[in-house]
Image (cartoon, rainbow, N blue to C red; front, top):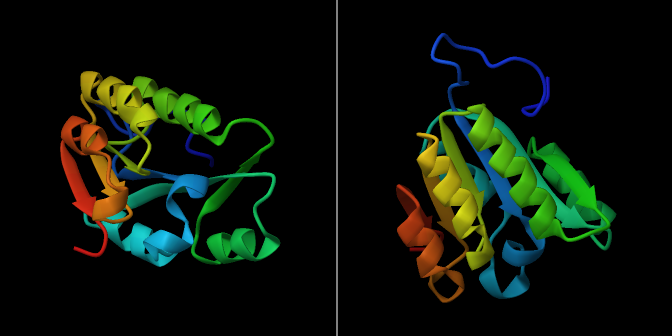
Length: 151
C-alpha cells in the first residue's frame, strides 16, 4: 500500500516510522558525492523506514531510476516542478499523520514550510543535507533532527 493511500495504522491516528522524501535534482549532484544508500542509511537513524520516495524530473536517466528502485525507493517522475510535487505529497503525509517522522533530503530552503507544517502536526522532522557546502541552515534549524552527510 502506498504511503498516501488507505487508513492510518495505529490507535493514535498515525503510522509509525519514517517517511523519507528525497529531492533528487537538488541532492544527487556530482559535487556532493552522495549516493542513494548514504541517504537511506542516514534516514534509518531516525527509525524504521515506512516509505522511501525519490522525486526526479523527466530528465532522470533510466540508470538512476533503476538504481533507486533496486535500493527500495519509490521513484516519482514529474514533468512539472519536482519541488512542488514533493512539497504537496510531504505536506499531505504530515497533515494526515501518516508517519511518526518526516525526513527530507535536500538543500533547498523552499522546504522549510513543509518542515514547519510537519512540526505543527506533532511529527518529528529530520533534515538530511548532502554536505556542509550544500546544507541549508534554514532546513537544519527548522527540523527537530538533522544530519550532514560526510561529517
